[in-house]
Length: 409
Ligand SMILES: Cc1cc2nc3c(=O)[nH]c(=O)nc-3n(C[C@H](O)[C@H](O)[C@H](O)COP(=O)(O)O)c2cc1C
Image (cartoon, rainbow, N blue to C red; front, top):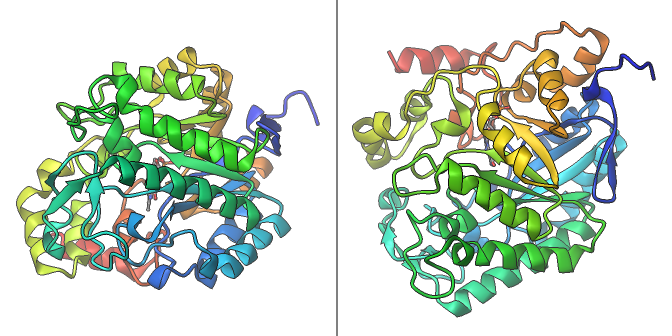
């Protein structure tokens, strides 16, 4: 290997795992597990990422129990899907990459009517659930201590299962408005017991889940955590508090932190930047009540944040400075030049979402030609396809783009 080799193509470790380069495919909900069963399409999606040269790909939103799903077309980690997941992890390994699974739970953010254990979705505190309204579940309940203990158990069991079916790493979702983030955020957590109030109390559930997962997988097994550096909503986690969240997770033994921002419930565009996804959502939404709701409040919820390369770098730098663990930069890193800039600043890895949806072979192509441009325009139309029967894809060369564009004019 020559000394002028870009840092992006050099190896680096997370806990006991050596990654061959610094690029990890970010979790981007694929929409490829109809009825909760991982499909061949999902396997092909991740194999193509591995063949394209990333060091590790991430299977998005693997929920820890059936009622942790936002919709019934999401997978939950259980024995019934072990053969499909074993095939998927083996396919990624055969293609030369590692595979991580994003372990998540929706908490109160659900529109899944096919609940198995619960009567209705539960979060830290009783509250109105906007996403539940069209499904006839307008109010989410508050978890009891027994519910919290159960949730922690689901994380422990799910982690054992993931390791057994061949995952090489686990990414715990602490951000984006899902269960753990709902407890961390003062916007959604109004509890007065030991799980609410001070940041230390609001982090208690996250710490317990991390501890349970660590106990299940052992010291060497990499556990990454995706966090929101801010919720981006009044009354939620601020940028300053986000740095404290990072410090607490670092002290609690996380191996790497992924520095995202925003929440799906209150301010999703902060994590993406670029054109609002509301137009694509209105165009593809089948439920008339949801469509009406999107037309009425969509532009408030899905705010405009003009895209610029490395749009979260200034904020992520504060986390980099505050913690000892590995830090994974995410958000608008779409060229080799940007990757080198981020890595030269001391970040250990890059996660990429949209650029790899556009071009799964981006890493291989950039290794061959440093000036290679992957062509992602950050139009965000892929995001509107998470409920599409064919799942997410780049629509730039697809008739669908024309259809959505026409429908939004
Ligand atoms: C289609 C799509 C689906 C996504 N689904 C998830 C998800 O399931 N979990 C998650 O943490 N982030 C999700 N994200 C956010 C990405 O992981 C990432 O934070 C964001 O796209 C910014 O990175 P990028 O500029 O490299 O695309 C999704 C993004 C896209 C484009």
